[in-house]
Each structure stands twice: as structure tokens, then as C-alpha cells.
Amino acid sequence: MKAINLKGFGDASQLFLDEIEQPLPGSGQVLIDVKACSVNRPDIVQREGNYPPPKGDSEILGLEVAGVVAAVASDVTRYKVGDRVFALVGGGGYAEYVVAYEGHTMPIPDNLNFLQAACICETYITAYLNAIVLAEAKPDDTFLLHGGGGGVNTAAIQICKALFPACTIIVTASTGKVERVKALGVDHVIDYKTQSFADEIKTITEGRGVNVILDHIGAAYLSDNMKSLALSGRLVVIGLMGGIKSELNLATMMVKRQKIIGSVLRSRPVAEKAAIISDFEKTILLLFASGQIEPMISDVFPLAEAAEAHRAMEAGTHFGKIVLEVQA
Image 1 (cartoon, rainbow, N blue to C red):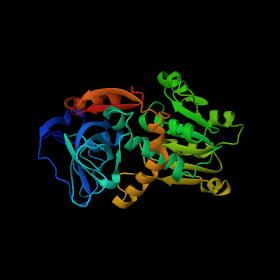
Image 2 (image 1 turned 90 degrees about the vertical axis):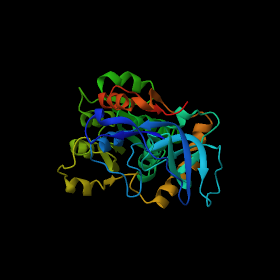
Image 3 (image 1 turned 180 degrees about the vertical axis):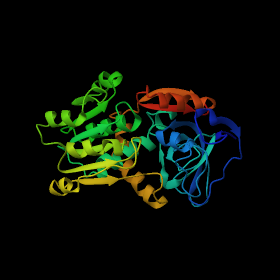
């Protein structure tokens, strides 16, 4: 089968279209004839040599796919050959075929095509797990979502609005994306290029701070994130684009009863990921089926142009998801 492989770790030029052996489903797995997969920030980090796949997972990039079931293991009961599905995978998505655990796979709602379905697993599950479940979000919470028009951030905006119509959503975005983020119906947008988000949060909330922060920057934002949290506020860190080490004022954290939660989805045990996906399916998937949430696609590239897709993500001009069309 065709797949995107790496000549070595480094920039996008290391990606190339290769011919490799097609995988076979093991116990509890399905083989998916991949129609589309998505590009995610962790793919960039893995390409650079800093995010190896969990033991036993494919070395090929790609964490979410959509397609048609091509084969199933003898102990799989939910799916049959020909079913339209999308799945979260530990690796292997940039290929014509990939294996996925039955519990990490969901049926595609009838109103979604493969390109749309390929956008859901990594970003929407990440947004739901971290902004809602781990943050113990409440209907009247105020959310600070970092990330402008990125996939996880736009997913978090949609999920928060759908689940909690009375919540307040504040988003940080670059100058060129401020108006597009406003169009998503958020309450406030902070231009992090020209404004201090900590100062703006203080003004917007009249000094109270926000209840939940979803952050992919890490160290560079830690101090201002903590200043922006309200009493009993929760900071969920899901990325480290701004570094891994920073000082923390523990006294303030204690007095304000704040929480810092670190979270990664990919390395969780198979059963734990299956439980998260089951909860997501019961709670969020129906919002896609009803059209209340619609995946936001920024750009579509053919599989062979994966390097260009990576360059587009690194340029930061996308708004929503970048998708690879694998097989029409």
C-alpha cells in the first residue's frame, strides 16, 4: 500500500510517498480502507523526532482517519466489512490502510463525508476531554481558549457553545484571525500579538478571572495563565509549544485553590482511550449527526502532498483542520 514515510527526522522535506506492507488487524481490531486523514500538531513534533508513537503502534504519522471497514478480527462484533467509520489511532493514519481498535472506532453519521469525519477524533475528543471532562466544566463557566483558529481551539469553541449556551468564551488569536474567530460567536477575542491576555482577562472579568483555561503553549504562558485564573480555576495544559520549564507561585495557587492539569491522549492505555471515546460518542457525536456541530475544514491536500500540508500548518495561516485525501 502507499503511505507517507520519513527519510529521517527534520523538516517537511523528510516526508515522501512510499510503498509499504499493508497491516493486518490483530485481536480486537478492524482494518480501515482510509479515505481521508487529518494533519495535527503532534505529527509535526513526531516528524522532528520529538514524539515517538506508543509501543506497538505504527511509526507512520497520522492520528485520526475516516474510511470503510475492509476486514475485522474474529472477536470484533460491532463492525462489518463495508461500514463507514472514523477512528483514533496511535499512528499509521497517513496511509491507504490502517488498523484501529474496535473501541477506538465510531460510525460516521450519515450527514458527514469522509473529509469531515477525518477531522473529529484527535481534535474534538481532545477538546471535549480536556476543556469539559478533566476541567470539570460547569454550564456558567468562563473559558479562556488559547489557539485562535487551530483545530483543537475551534473544536473547543463549538463544544463549549453546544453544551453550555450560557457560558462565556474568551479566545486568544493572532491579528489576522481575530475577525474570523469573532465570527464563530465567541464573547471576546484577545489579539495576543498586540495585547496582554492577562491584562485583558482582568478587565473583561472585572478582576474575577476565568474558570477554565485550555492551553497548548506551556511554559511561556504559565505565569499569565495563573494570573488569569479565578478562585478554584482549572488550567489544562495540552501542549508545550512555548517551552517545558517555568516558575510557579505556589502560594497564590494554594490561596486561590487553583488546579493545573497535564493531559496527553495518545499515550493512554487502550482501555482508557476506549472509555473516553465511548463517553465522547454518547455525549458529542449526536451533535454532529444533528448538524449542531460541523467540522471546520481549512485546506485539503492529496496524500502525496503531505509535505505541503505540514508546511501549511507550520505557517499558521490555516483556520480549522488540514485534511489529507487518501483515496477518493
